Length: 313
Image (cartoon, rainbow, N blue to C red; front, side):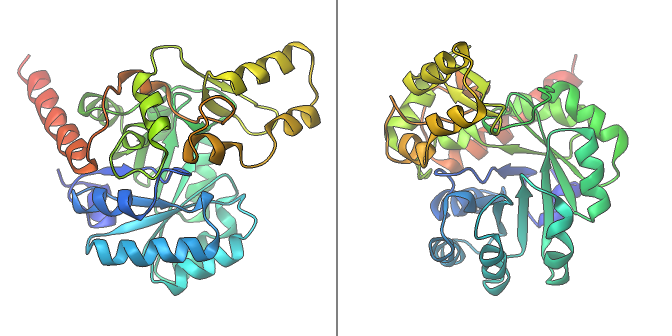
């Protein structure tokens, strides 16, 4: 399954595990890398010294390529980037910010840079900034999302039409069949988040993993666009947000309702009532918690089976 993405990262399969906050620690990243994909440590929920520990442990747990995902809204971004360079990390995925800010600096230190986008406009800006590849993430995705609500089915071919660098599809992908579908649309690989939340190695709380497995169609919704669009499971906190909207809440009132560390409270500490539970629509297709290696293997097997079935029709 060699192509531009496997060659770019030096991996066996064009499968990237998303660097999700409160879920993507060194255990998950190393497990996915050892299975032939590309594991990412999610720096968005880590202080610099915590990230240092995760990088060190990942380096010991795998001799395969892995990377770090860095949301550029992070308050200690200078320290995070300096640490990544110091620790010899070779792959960085950036998101939630201007790719021009860090791409050149990282590439000067021999780092492969990928930027996450939600539109053709931002994909072109990322290409102009010199990134090595882009992740185009559709509206179905969990966590923070694009405001335009463009679905993966529409976004991938639209971005493919305009860029020349490798394209990674994200949003609504948890199976080999979905992987084949987006690659037919022009993607060179896939980034998968929600399916890896429901893995043994994910650092998220067991209650959150179980809630993901229990989620059905329509149990998530994109909200809080005034702050930063985020797809959430519909729990009490989500309902509180909806009631605030019905009362005409201002941006400041919504910010006060959200408060601090609510995502940590839900996804990491296990508060299924008041916590912020970020997950994708594809959670409705996830029915079990299993080892990351098994997830990768099943996705690859299903991809090959789907490809054979289509070609034989």
